[in-house]
Length: 451
Image 1 (cartoon, rainbow, N blue to C red):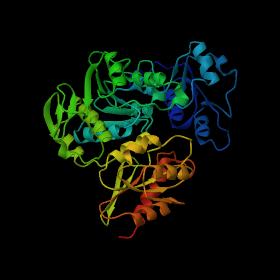
Image 2 (image 1 turned 180 degrees about the horizontal axis):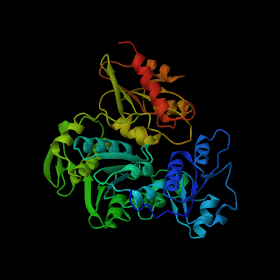
Image 3 (image 1 turned 180 degrees about the vertical axis):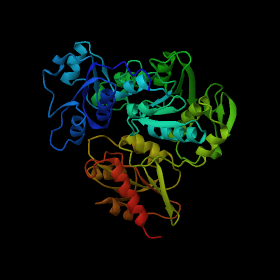
Image 4 (image 1 turned 30 degrees about the horizontal axis):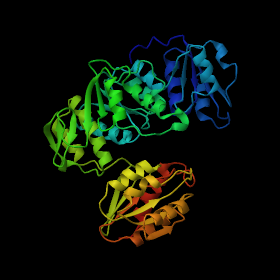
């Protein structure tokens, strides 16, 4: 770690526990800070609170006391999910107290350089592909951030000869001050989380923050096929590395039917790529650019492109059974993600979809329903999805009660060379606690089918 004295004897409030708050509180306490943790969840059964108290860290549970900030804190570190409308956050900002998320803390102490990855879709896939490229290329990568490993926990142990590959959400990026990745990637920007950010402009500004502190010797890899991101890039001080899936370009990384190009020169044959889908091609290009800039050799990059078939629950290839290929895209909790999944296949597709009904329209899927020969609907949205599929001319539409039932029905409706795709276009919370659990149920059901 570096700069370990900067938090010594400072009074710091950690707002919200979960994994990030727990890790931040422990780290700051070990660095000599006077830490108070405030979490809205009840005291009973709060294991993190009990563990922190055992280390003599002051913890307040069960709500946010109105006089909390009277203790003269010099810094607040908040859970990314806590909105800025929270009264404690509003008061802190009014008092001029800095409000960070823990990725800022990670940056302040990290000896390792950071590659930061953000975007509406594709962050996790890009992060994972790049991690594998750097691993095979012997660059000692560490994976961190929104992908599931708390950044400050990783940064605490990172060495100068390692590289932190950090997936950053818009929520996390709103809480930065000096966070400066040596390489930043913006995969794409579509409207998302507007209940949190309020407007499309505010959401885009949060994503743009990933390059706000970059300097002339840093790199910004960005989606040159989106005008919104090109505007962000023009404001950056970093060296610009555009990526495009719309044919060969002379600058940055691009692709045509035959090659991936680096600055207009053929670099790798496209035939090496095993991961399907145009959206995944964007992820591959941005990860490949970062790997090149990090000094990975061509062989390491080719190795990953020829073997990587998807992140779990994100267009994950499960198996082939009697000529049918099964894909788990449980992470597709909105129509944008399902649209990308449907566009990835030319073969006839049996679509398993449905889940929590938020009242959103499925109309965005209509241009991509041409290859869908049957739909198995499940969850709260099953009737609305059925009506939509009927209006698209899909003839075979059936309801399922469970994921096992859905997989069995999809298999019975399929023929050799068909794709059977779970891509729900809906959140999971009507039947499952998470999209991961939903996806695991799909995999279990597929693997239980008899060949």
